[in-house]
Length: 434
Ligand code: PMP
Image 1 (tube, rainbow, N blue to C red):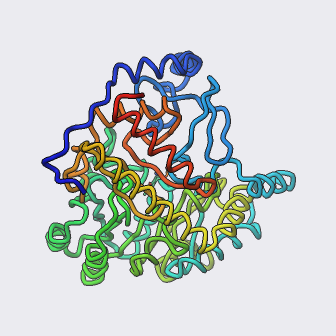
Image 2 (cartoon, rainbow, N blue to C red):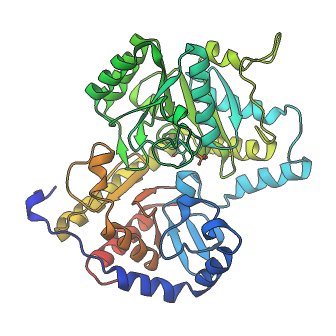
């Protein structure tokens, strides 16, 4: 990597990017103005909003999307990393269509939920028992509740910049409307800083129920330091609290998720995104003795867990088809493409001498508009600046979609030409040719 001192800050003209975007997307603009009269803020998902307005999508196929104005873009966001096979995969479509003809949901168990559970627990052996939910939010909510019930303790540790969904505990640091009693149970520490965690754990002592951690800090594109993750395992074991790995994003790193990659065995795991094959399926699971708190047999469960669409067969068959297609060779290929992309982009930023870098692991990557070392949420903030937002908009104009904060992923329909297309689009954006 080029010496930090010899690079110049990247410059991307925001005004020009906005103007070109508005010229390309008049129908999305009109749609958004109309939508704002019905949907709060014009959308139903804060995470897909950005200024001046997001493109309105009408179609997705493989790694391509098409918006209301007919703009086609390569989709490196893939519904925030969930569409690992790309959009509208023919085999997933076929499985879903067949299941829709047989019924979409029943107030009873189905064979499909068991098949999907077996596929997951065979790959992720720490998941001895599991339960399905419709979102990662519910999965982390229940994992935390289980940990509190099992340990009979109240406090949980959530890392700075960690994203675990939108429930009160997950949003305690970032949202209005959280009761102070809840806030008081949520402890915080910087990611990848084991000494800071050890201090918090020591102070919390017998009050700490769990540490929940992403093995890849999704909001900042930071892989966990292996010694940090192993240190968390030891600290929780020593303190009698549970280690919850939030693998909602990181499960795509290996058949057995990041826990296989890093060789760490958590007490509980939360999953989502790829296990639903593009549909709203998520899960939490882990140690049989902890999950026994959900068992309704006998005197009834300590923790009731309902959910009208939990394990619904449409999402389950999409997940089954997807996981069956995800052989070890497919994960290896995606990870190789991720390595290739990071090498290409790193070389590009060096060649241009700009203060931009790419982080990531396996098929996950993140572009940051700084050259400072990035290892926790605070250090990632310098690279998530106005230039990065302008660049992501300019990239949309160039036919490539990433998250506004620079997050992206590789999907199976992609190959070297798509990586080259992203590299070339970034080069045009960074040399003001866009
Ligand atoms: N945990 C992690 C690590 C996530 O990345 C997300 C969503 N991006 C969630 C939990 C919440 O999942 P959902 O959006 O399905 O509620």
